[in-house]
View 1 (tube, rainbow, N blue to C red):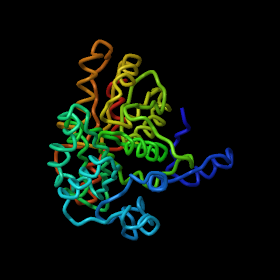
View 2: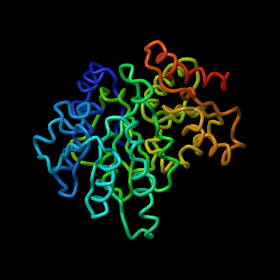
View 3: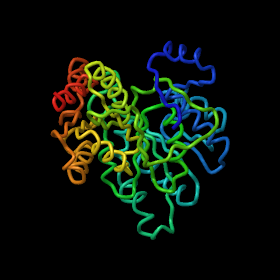
View 4: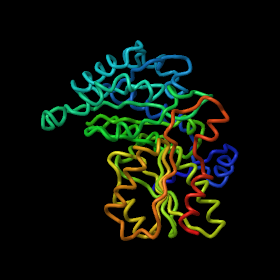
Length: 346
């Protein structure tokens, strides 16, 4: 297994480099930028399009400088016409190109659901696999500076419910680079979701291009008392919770899903059969959210192994507030995960 430890503190990473000079660190945002750069360098069929991809800021730094280096035929700014632009990207994919469509907010993707759910997700099925749709769509979720109900939603469960789509949510810089490359070279439409709170995290990222297989979860921490299944930024919170719970004598096995769809049932069920307890930590809403899907699968396929009720840590079923005070109450953290674990291990 590749070394994938993540450091939120740059000084902590600097200390690790002193111990191992071979470590190469990139932030999550720079890992995405490096993957995109290498794809543009090595594959003439790959191109990037989206609103603001050529701006000086480059979509929070993830496309910075690419338009200047590769030109506007490879890195294209688009008008505010999400449904039409998605249709153009899908059409390019149908001809054999490999477009990467970028949205600064996942909220904007609701304007292109017709193209995503009714067309891109369905063409391969309707033509018995003779038609490929190698379209990757990047979208950003998560809290910001009071971004509120229309600019910080976590809509991943919406896309997992559509047959024909794959949904990827990397939690580390290593996976951000490897999963993005793998998504671009998958012949199915892939929704690639990034959490803004991860952009400054730093971790080991090899310089050479590489892929991380879609559909494979990874065990970030081994344990015997309780399984914590998490994705995206909640993996960071789960790791914090795991460290504190260890001090209390509770050994957590922490699974980073990496890919929501296809889901790695084998890894999840294997862990639950071992620990007998399950906590699911999700960035999305609890009602109708992805945590409900994981919970249902474990209830159906490993119910006899459960020693306690499944616990879910997810957002309340209300729109995202703008107030910083309400945000603090709305979003979940490692403290909520610790409380959930203690409810079923005490």
